[in-house]
Length: 231
Ligand code: AR6
Image 1: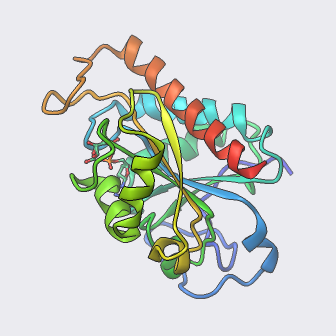
Image 2: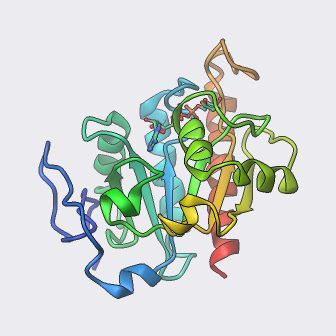
């Protein structure tokens, strides 16, 4: 039915209360494994310093636009901690819309260990990338390149040399990558969001007219990239 978005444990499907840790274990429903699922971080809201209120508005708007276009596939917004401001804002905004809570929900965990630590099967994960598509740096980019191993860098270079803000590139993972064999991830989608951090390239200097436009484009490219894999 049409319900608000809650934070759920992938194992039990039970709603988690604040501070409660998800139970680690195996996924209890086989059908869960076969549901195409994209796990994505909130683009630009940490190292790139994008306003959380504006970003959460755009996430919910774009999820609402795409969730019915991708069949039975699921979209999952991920962050590391239960204290995540962006997850709270998105849950509050999404609960006011008619978004199917089995097709879009938030999840607390490391995006590189969603299955092994959280029991959540995601065949595709998104990366908040840098324009050079380089491993390292910080945040989710460093975590994904490190967990995937050297084959991700090679596979990425086969698809693109660089990325413009607002664009995404779909990269198939080698079956030898630990992210594939341990977590069941078959594709990584690199996305470059707008940057408000003066210490990073292409800083928009608080121009949120342009910034919001680029963030919308980034989620559109990401969800279209995911849709192209699902089909
Ligand atoms: N699992 C889940 N979520 C995470 C993880 C993780 N392992 N690590 C961070 N997050 P950020 P940006 C969340 O800074 O703002 C990089 O160095 C984090 O809490 O990774 O788009 C790139 O090379 C936040 O909600 O991305 C770029 O130069 C979200 O992921 C630059 O940072 C995005 O945080 C991109 O900055």
